[in-house]
Length: 297
Image (cartoon, rainbow, N blue to C red; front, side, top):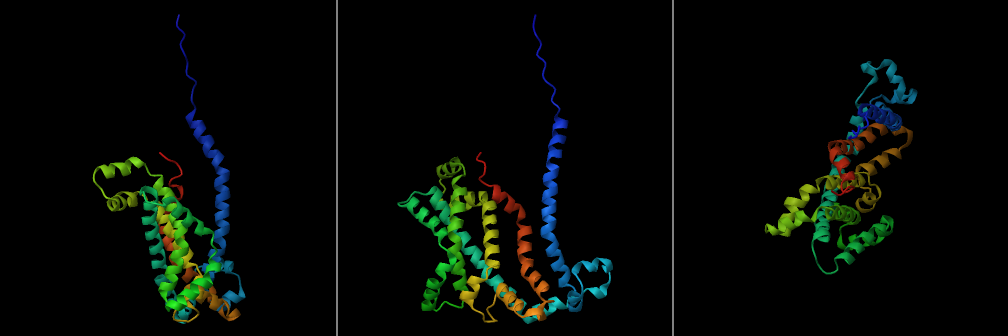
């Protein structure tokens, strides 16, 4: 006699519904936290389109009772802040941010490939020394850098800010990119070498396309850091109205007191608009970059 083995029934549909049900509380908590973070920004956005008398007389939530009244909305706040220096500050910030992002990301990508896949004397020692620079506080280095810039007549110029941001952004960039590039399969690099590819060809045609998510994530972090920077721009560019970036201009506006109360919401959104566009445009790369290298195949 032969015994017939019976397989236990697998209730995949019930398991899937159970998994979905177990995720509901987490989704609700995340949605609640997202709403808490969004409400202040929503109030700021609404106030940026309200008249000064309305801002001082009532809360932003009162607009929902008369939402489609065109008399309750105005672009005067945006017109005023742009005419009072924020248009120039926006251009200055773009001129500071783009090179301050491109320089460290580009240099770090080349350095990371060298540390990951090239053999040269002192490679590990140099890498550890660069990573160790991450512990150097920015504030401690400002005075020595300022003295060097003064001697080179660089203070008050864009290159001074570019080099400062590049110097303090490079250690973390090299560390992250080197760890990611080092986790790529060695068989890919060996195949490229067998085919006669040089290091430069391997880097540009193989490593860079594979590293796009992590490079994009790093560029977003560097962009947000430079765009929102106040201290470095104030120290190396000064308070001259022609050289002010958005954070310095916003600080000056906030220091005017209650007279600028109606202008601050509009000024804040002028400051926020480009980072929001960059983040949402590169969001898919950002998410992939955060998880890149987490699991090795």
